[in-house]
Length: 116
Image (cartoon, rainbow, N blue to C red; front, side, top):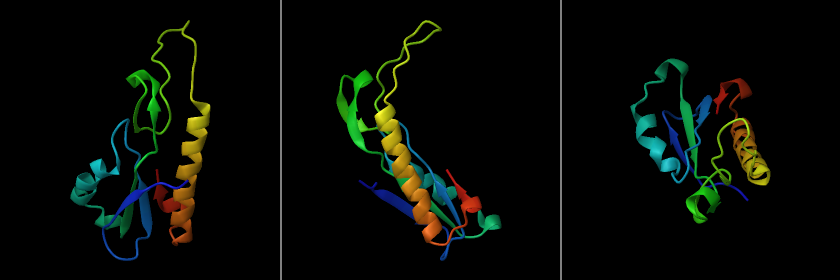
C-alpha cells in the first residue's frame, strides 16, 4: 500500500522536503494554503509533501470510516485507565511514512533536510 499525496514545490529542484501529517478525518489538502503563504526562500527550494492518511473505521467515532493514521480505541484518562493502542495501525502508518522519507532521499534530498 502507498499513500496518495499532494506535493507543492516552492521552486524547481527542491533541496529540502517538509512532510506534514494531517489530523483525524482531514486530508493533505488542509496544508496547501499554509505552504503557499510561507516564505522559506532563505533555505532554498522546498518540496512540501502532504499525504492523505489511510481510511479505516475509527472506534471512538462509532466505527465511522475516515482518514486516520491509526484507530482510536478509546479516550480513557487517568492513572488507572487501561492502555489500549492500535499497534498494527501505528506500525502500518510508520511504514508508509518511512516510505515517503525514502522517496525524498531517492529524489536527491539529503536526510538532514527532510522534516516530518
